[in-house]
Image (cartoon, rainbow, N blue to C red; front, side):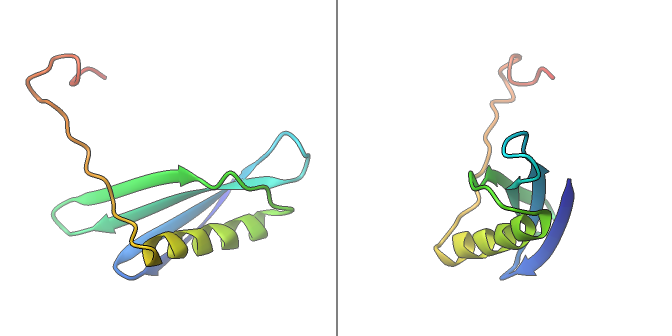
Length: 91
């Protein structure tokens, strides 16, 4: 696995090329979009679902996918945990 990271419009896009079992020597890409406000960091991860012929193609496509998501109005999702629920606090 290899990673590529770029800044784009107040977000950080990180693409991770993941090797596939089949077809051999092909990759998919996982994309992580993050915004760090200084006080806290918001983070969203998703899989592309696409297959690429090599690592570099997957990484470049991951960055482009992240940019397209941001340009199309992508919003990070807040995670809400009920701190009064003992099940929610378990590891």
